Length: 458
Image (cartoon, rainbow, N blue to C red; front, side, top):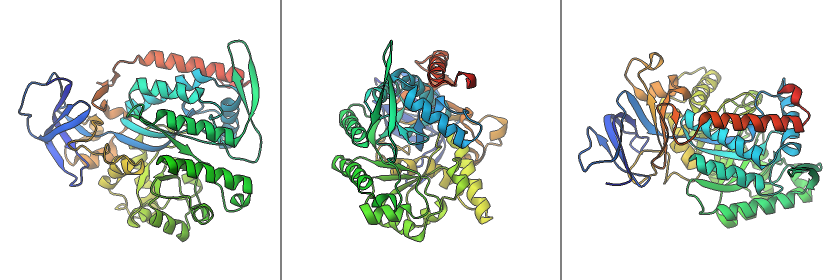
């Protein structure tokens, strides 16, 4: 039996349709997929690679359905959110080069591996709607590094918001030049990237992003044409269309004006929704990325439990990594529970299994990948994490679902596996030098801060 991996003696949270829990079981992986899972010892031919997971829980890798590329190198900058937005926008537009985006990608992927997040959906840029889509170089650098790190990723790329000129600075070894970037140019670059990465790597997908425009903005003919162009290109290719920041009537307005949503729509935040907004989500099959740790969840509330009752797919996102949050999905599971339990004054809202669903199979459904990832089942890709449960804060040893959803954190992840490839074992990255990743990120950070005239904050 070549190219095989056997995980033995684990308590297994499968998240399969029957939500099976195996008290002490095994998982057999061949060629990146699960080919066997069951109680007790594995009986069969010799397996070259074995992991004894006694004292650990095996579960599907976590799926983060809303985060941002770039933010791991701008987190903590600025005394409050508006200051952070200004600083981040200045860095993204005037101070970065492909090496910045490559170094940041390695740092971001390393954090996700160490937190047990095997799949994430990232917008390429953000903050004050600065998307690095004026040329393909930065995104290509990001994707090449993510491919080498081994995590699974959906990268959403598209145009900035309209209303002002967006001036980007591009660097060579000895000089730089400033160019004004148009939305049409950005859409064409995004389209070329979507096409170039279609089928190139089974762990990486490039999809479209589109700013959230309100009803008044959609009355502007130029904005309307931009939105239609992105919508049509996403549908022609059958890929996700990702939006960041829906709230208070914007879903109904975009549905009425554009017919924008279908089951390939992934909408982040979704706070203070109207009844019409909720009706559109139910009718169209659009998916929601709920981000309980995000600032938008301070400004308004995503009715996640109510949407789930409506039959809407609601997943969890971190909105990581800046200005004030990490990629730790366990932290977001706990915060989601407290956020809604406080609203309803009812601790039974979002019970542990429901939280795990949102972070695993629910995330897979949101990304249109539920037939491949999100649960531990024969035939699915072997995206698996092992949590070290023999720790005081995870004791006593009963009810693993509750212990994982209520008490675990990213630092409890011992092993991270994506597509059968072990990316971390015993809290140490496999095949990657963590110190080198940190040093590379530090160099890129300080160079960008100097270029942006912000060295005093570094």
